[in-house]
Amino acid sequence: MKIYVQPKRVEALLPTDILFQTTYWSQVKSRLGWKPFAFDFQSSAGNRGDVLVLIRPLGCGLAAAYVFQGPETEPDPEKHGLFLEELSHSMIKHINYNVAFIRYDLPWSSPYFSDSPMDDSYHDFPPVRLRELRMNFGTRTWGLRKATTDLTVADTLIIDLARSEDAIFAQMKPKTRYNIRLAQRKGVHVFNASVEMLPLFYQLYLQTAKRNGFPPGTYRHFSALFSALILNPGSSEIIFLLAKKDQDILAGAIIIISRRRAIYLFGASSNERRNLMGPYILHWEGIKQARGKGCYTYDMGSVSPYHNPHHPYFGMYRFKTGFGGKIVHRNGSWDYPLNLQEYEAFRNFELMHSLKFPE
Image 1 (tube, rainbow, N blue to C red):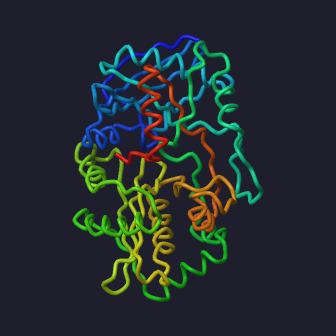
Image 2 (cartoon, rainbow, N blue to C red):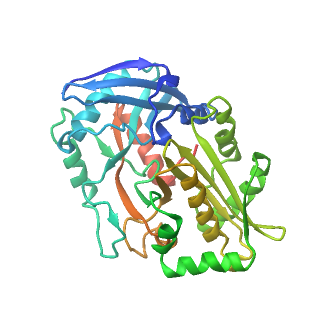
Image 3 (cartoon, helix red, strand yellow):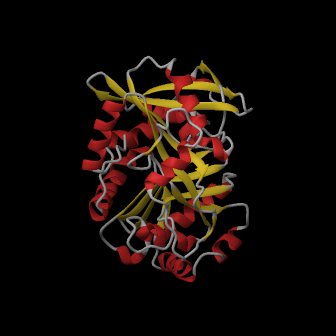
C-alpha cells in the first residue's frame, strides 16, 4: 500500500462530526502550546480523507505527534497496521520536528467488541501482545505498539437523539427517571452559564477530581475551549450548563457541538447536597438542548466497556447507562515509534506516573 499526502492549511480541514479533528480543536490546542499540521491523504487502495496532527513538545529537542480520534477514514480492518505505518512515514517528511513517535487515537470500531445496547455479560480484551500481533500483520516494521493509555475515550456511551423527548426519557432506566423527577420536585434549576462563571465551574471540577482520584486539567485548558471560538465562529458551539438549588451550584457540564454530534466533554459536581441529584437533571437538560440544536447523537463520554465493578470507570458506567443508549467501542490509542530509544524512555515514564496529559 502506498499513501500520498499533501500538507494544507489547518483552516482547510474538512467539516466533521469528530470534534478532535476540527479546525476549532487545533485552535484550542494551539493556545496550550501545541503545533497543528493538516494533511490530505490518498492511498493506493482508494482510501482518502484528511487528518489533523498535533505536535506536543517533550523537552530536550524532542516532540510527540498526536492524532486525536483520527484518521476518520478507515481502511480494510485487515490492513489497519499497514495503513498507519505508511501514513506515518508519509506525513513525517513534512513535519519539521524531531518526533519520537506518533500516537493515533483511533475512532475505528474495536475488533473485540460489537457496538450494542448495554451488555452485562463478561468480556475482556486479548493480551496486549496478541493485540499488537494482529495490528502489525502485514506491516514492514512490526512497529505499532498499544499505547499505555487511551488518549481520549475508547468506550463511550452514545444516546440517539433522532427520537422524541418522550421516547428518549422512556428508554432510561427507572432509577434515572426517578432521580430526574426528584431533582425537579426539589427545585433544582439548570441554566445556561456565561464564560464569566467558568472559575466557579473549575472549583467544582477540582472537587470532582479530588473525590474521584484523577489528575485535574489546568484552568488554562478550560479557558482555551471558549477563547478558541472567537477565531472559529459557527464551527463549533459550547453548551455550558450549571445546576443550582437556591444559591448553591450543584453540578456543571461543558458540552461541545461539532456538526450533528454533541459531546459531553467535562463535568463537575459539588461534594455538598448530592441528594438533590443535580448531575441527573443536568444531563437531561443537555440532551434536550442538543436535540433542539439538531444533533443526532449525545456522547456521554467514558464508561467501562462492560459491567465490571473492578474497572476504574465502572462508576461512570453505572451512572451513564441509566440514560439508555449504547456503548460504542473504539480501537483505542496506538503508537508508531520513530525514535525507538526515546519512545521507550517516554513509555516508561508514562507507565511509572500513569498520567494522561490533559493538555
